[in-house]
Length: 539
Image (cartoon, rainbow, N blue to C red; front, side):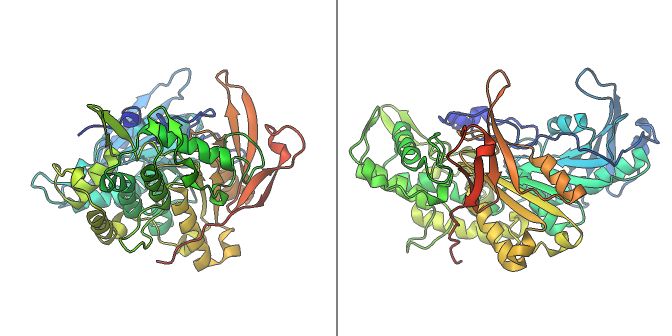
């Protein structure tokens, strides 16, 4: 199975365990940063030294759990001394194995626990634990029941679905990790954490919302970036552009997509922020007529009416044969590349779907690794969409708007999403946020759940927009000191590490608008103003 070009640089975890999917997009970047720095909090509580040796944790007796190793790490110039524990959790008689990594600072524990999420089909990695460990957190991650970033865990060798491994990936694995990590923390330090936090983006964001919805007592604070909330809809919907191009027998060359993106951004550059900076400040307020591109010349040929039809349908998003809404499309200002890639083969253009989408349909829906995506038709896509929602919403979907139990135990959740995210459309997160507000009260929701949309930012970072910073610290301030974030901050950093621009990120649906006075690279010259609300389709 061929990996798309951009994916070959994709499969590395960020500091928060999320898989960045913006690497090869031909947009200028603005100092892409990890989804959320895990900086040290201010003030109490202090954790204190351990009361047990690291080696003694090998004798820890937990239900259906094996302690595989407990190793003292002396640390170095950048890494504090720590106890690193690996455990395996099982669910007899299923035969599954959920790996859990727990890293415990030896001398500098701040009394808190920070769990790190995964990305794509990866449940998580121990590589994500360095930053929180450096910041004094006891920290943990899990593989959620399978090794690596691929999706072949879904099928047994006989070609049948392994529902236990799917449940482990969906929500069981992260809850196992949470319960296990807290037990290890208490055994090592003699007491549990004063506060527990979740930090994740993409799949990690979905995992965090799963925790808030299904295990509301696990965490005091949840940071969920670009969350794959509506997993079956989003994962199936990602291949929509390829379906359209295949059906129309018109694979659009990349440079035509690039020309369209440039035209959209140019036309809507001032929308929202009032600044000509190559970023659409309020993408939902951008109304660009793609038909004006017909006849435009590009290095790969003239943009035709057929090309524009493909672009329009990608922006519109998946629809039934009758034109009814299925899911959201590409937000204005987000790149077409990534999900709608095409490649030239022997002088002809052909589609090149995102490999995650091929895994999803072939393994989870068809249960046939040899499935040929070229057999896709709009009718087959519609059937796959219905099948995905029916089969997987309960186990993989994190779209339950009832967060009352999480709210009642004092939990706080901070959502953020890049407005130029081509992989996980920001509209899905806005849709969820609006449904929570409808159910739990618009004013009351602000007390425990807030959403921030970052203009021009891609999936978990990258893109032309200024990069979000300090999200995790804002969550800690909210949980521990009751100071709810009114805005988040974003910045542009040059190659020398110098901050060259700052800007506030406003709570949805507000957008940051330049006052017209002062330097537009100075965040203090912006004010949050009313933005465009998403019209949530009835369904």
